[in-house]
Length: 443
Ligand code: GDP
Ligand code: ZN
View 1 (cartoon, protein in one colour):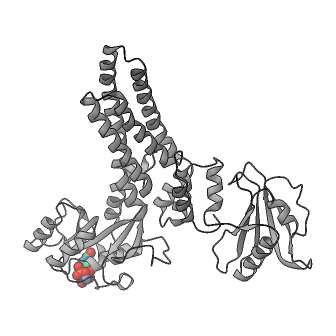
View 2 (spheres, rainbow, N blue to C red; view 1 turned 90 degrees about the vertical axis):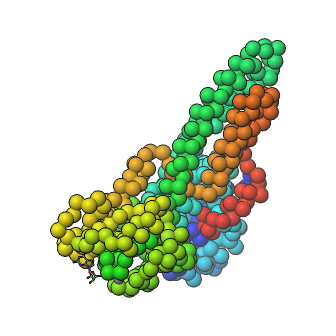
View 3 (cartoon, rainbow, N blue to C red; view 1 turned 180 degrees about the vertical axis):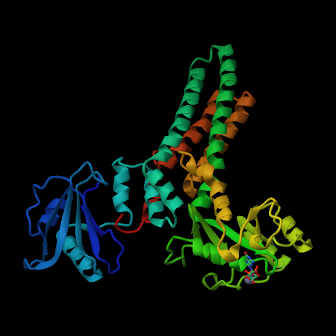
């Protein structure tokens, strides 16, 4: 299906210890042979060869390791050769240009993964998981991505697809043998419980979608409380707790998010804390109005009270204000408090004693994280799931109204196709081209 051997730089183009130039296609090995100092034409699959890349005058260009992977046990199911060269951008580009001048074509973005998909090595949800892995900004996102790469989404959806095939088959029988009038009645009667069961299953998956998205992208979080309750101290304690190294958050988060912190498997995107890295006493002394504004953007509220004092009117207003939000109620200054049996999370921010808050954060999603089933977080996949659900709701209504079976079948067929489309098994070429072109070069 793919005639050309493609090549690209598969590592990030910046100075580093090594870079990898990857080739895929029938001529991958012979092209590299023509520029390599060692004989690799008969090399076994999955072997590594030390030598030099040579220019057209047979002069060494760089000292490299060449890895040979023979089809079909490769990422693309074609022959793959990887050249590990020194990591400077100049030398990397130079070797790529030598490879291209010996017959390889520059790969389009995502073309390696596209070939893997077309050759049936991975389904579309797995291809998307590859992209998710590269974009993952926290443990949980990486974890979800690896499950996706290993095919968990297909495992999740295949039973639902099979159920629909069964219902369709039932209806087909019904259409083919219309003379059995009473059978027709019975079939619709039979199909309804099956349809309801199916809708319950899809709802279970969709209910977990929000969690999946929260865990993948991080939870937009706001710290709210009266002046002097210890918001800035809490922020500093959280920063202290963050073990992840975030080098570049610009561009990956939206404007309102000021910083990301990673607490266990949870990522909090902190909203509007007025300069997170320089946070001591920088959280504004916010009024109710300002709180309302921040709250709109937040998925999670950390509502802080001074535990050493009784709640006053302003505290109670904040309680009311955050009533319909996902929130954690935090009593700070435990060290000063006589009476700590109020229900909530007790911490002493100033002393970096926030373990009960961290446990509470972890517990929020513990159940979802422990489950084997994948959490869907990809917009395209979720959209298609929702479409399939709508199709089946229409089918269900039609069944309840004793509509002609062949009309019901159309809706079920559509639900079936929408699920298959998640895996790329029913696909439009233009759609696939757009999807794969979003991938970085070299994948
Ligand atoms: P904010 O106005 O809500 O940001 O509160 P700050 O973090 O600026 O803290 C207000 C005051 O309370 C400061 O003097 C802090 O040192 C003090 N404080 C904060 N957390 C604690 C705590 O856990 N224990 C005690 N004893 N004092 C605290
Ligand atoms: Zn402060």
